[in-house]
Length: 359
Image (cartoon, rainbow, N blue to C red; front, side, top):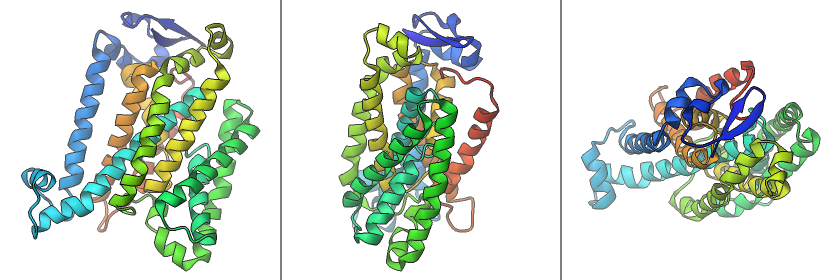
């Protein structure tokens, strides 16, 4: 089944009926719904991500040919500078971009689905800021420098921010957005204040605090990648439940679903994904907002396709931001800054739009 929007009401129609798409879904989504169009879109997104991975490994101040990149990955030679650059610098950077981007893309989709708020994403709801405060506070007050140890403080900060935002917002889209903005406005300067008061913590977290993919090493990827995978494993089975939730709480209950369980598991996945992404790459904004809206335009409203596509597009967007940042300034511009620049037009478009498909 595929969920569509007609007027102000969400309805379901068979996957084989692309003509049932409401105008809110956009004409481009109709093409993707015909036959195996969604699978083609997902395959193309994976291909684009593969090209961006190759670009991330090969492009930069020192350009490295694709053949050398491949050799560095499968049969590195000792003493070859290009191989050392690929394996020791660019490969960890690329993996962090893929993991953090996928986590943020899926977390944004889950947040929008359970709140039915088109502006919901880990950054705008205060979760990213909460995770960042947790990591910085752990470094300043407890001397915690290990990313694996600090990730638990990130989870605690994100969870606390989520509790505050949802308690104030009471499930209403406008209240949630305002509560998230207020919490973020409070926590971001608090993070900066804590960093400025502790020189050692500032030096340790300076690059991380602006969303640089170079701030963590290979051992961090090994430690935190399983947590991202766990968050995705929690999220993917929720596809049918999220489709039911899009019809409204009463309809979802009539279909035999536990609305509280769905929101609880989704919230756990959001905290896990947002906290781990923040521990990996720093407080990166707007990726979780832009990616779900782009994915809906490509494959419609069914979460069975949206969840994997958001993971792929989130990774691709963050890698694109990182690669672009290597050439936009005389030095490098951090991926978090470029990602915000790319996501800002989406935020403006969503704010100006009268209706957003599926929400």
